[in-house]
Length: 72
Image (cartoon, rainbow, N blue to C red; front, side):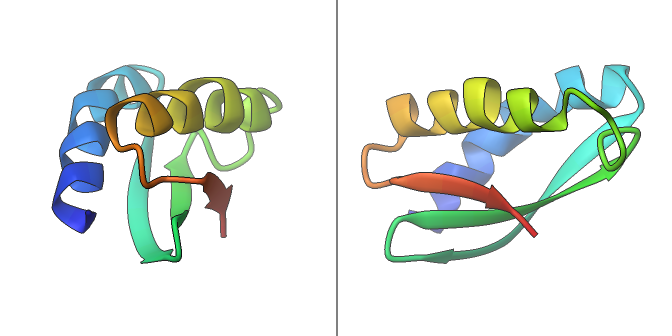
């Protein structure tokens, strides 16, 4: 599952980097994906929307075992 999550995050990275941010996979445990948003994403007021409505939604679509994505 980790490899597939990494693949999906690699697809999302160019969009985040275009705005000065990035994402790092920290851990996956029982379907919960822990990520760290860095750069401009770290303090962005739209961070939770990006995480939930973007990253989490896409990960759940492409990796059915993903239950939740949380930022650490």
